[in-house]
Each structure stands twice: as structure tokens, then as C-alpha cells.
Length: 239
Image (cartoon, rainbow, N blue to C red; front, side, top):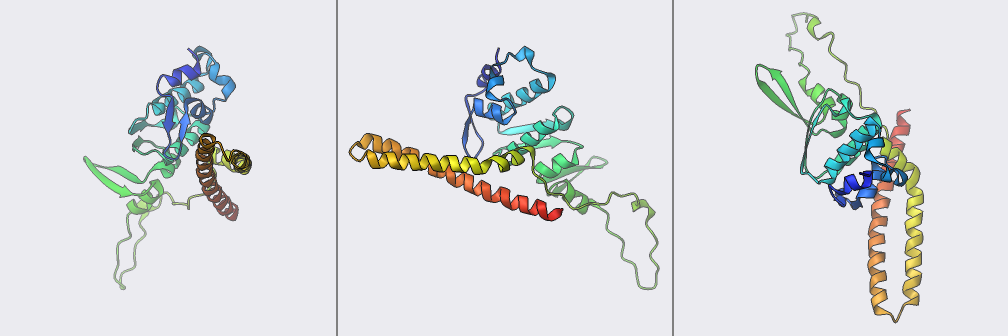
């Protein structure tokens, strides 16, 4: 069986929340360029097979995803792509992980095992959890010299989160200007065709629909362009 057929068995299209992507487009997102989509499964490396298996699960459009230490099985690039995908995933995601950077990236709630069968829920990501769960110093009166709490001396210092592009964001940032220009060229071409097809009402309707779809896509691209450039400025200011 070939790679593209293996994915199409799970689904021909997948909605990411922002747009509808074909199986081939999702394969490209997960680092399978068009030429490799016709490769035979048996010829893939172990890492490629794990990445392909993950994509097949996503193409089935589940509404709940469960991850058990995904960092143990996925390489950094694949993990970064997964993080980007989860940004727009409409369902619930439950992850068990010791990778604090992964939890910082995807989590909006941490459930911590506090011992003796007790669970505590903390809003936010892992860095937020560290701040909330760090024991607060006891209040002392003004006549008592506070003693050093040696039990907390080894606690990890929470550093400010460092902003950076994910693998996919870096690629988008490098390519989005050209993509916007290409869409604008297509819009110009459609507008010229509309001017030339004044009496062909069926063609006019088709062209108007195509223009509307391109205009919506261009609007999404421009919003994404603003986000990426603002993020780039923030990253630059950290240096």
C-alpha cells in the first residue's frame, strides 16, 4: 500500500477549524512532500511510520485525543507540527507528559497528583502550575527573625517563557509574503475575466464564487501575516 492510499482510508479531507485540507495537503503538513506520497509503506523509516500513523488518526477526525508521553515517540519536528495542529483542534486533548515545554505549548489546565490519592486542578500551562503550586513563605511577626527554609532551597527557579517560532511557524513566516502575492495575482486575474464575461451569467456566477472564496482566503492569510510579524518582533526584542 502507498502512503497516500493509507491516509485516504481514514479520510479524504480534514477540517482544521480554519480551512478544509485534503489528505495530500495534510501529508505535506506532516513532512511528506508530493513525491514521497506514492512511496510504499514498507520502505518508510521508523520515524516516518510513526508520523504517518499519527496523521491517520487525525484524519479520522476524532473529537478527543489522548497522548501518553508523545515526546518519547515523536521527533522534534513532528512534535512541533502536532503542537501547531492542536492550536485549532476543536475537541478535547488529554496528555500525560514529563515534557514541560510540550505542556507549556498545549495545556490550558494542569491536573496534578498531590499524593494520597488527591488531585488538584490548576488553570494555565505548566509554568503557571509551577507558580501556583510553589509553597508560599509563612508570615512572621516583626520580633521574630525568619529562619531559612532549606527545604525549598532546591526548588526549580521558574524562568520567563522564551518566545520562539515553531517549525511550522518559521516556514510560514518565510513563505507567507509570496503566498499572499500569489492570491492577489489570482484575484486580479479573476477580476479581469469578470470584466470580459459581462454577458455570460453562468460564468459570472462561477467567477464571483471563486473571487469570494479567494477574498476570504486572503483575509485569513493577512490575519496570519499580522500574527507572525508581531511574534517575530517580540522574539527579536528578547535578544
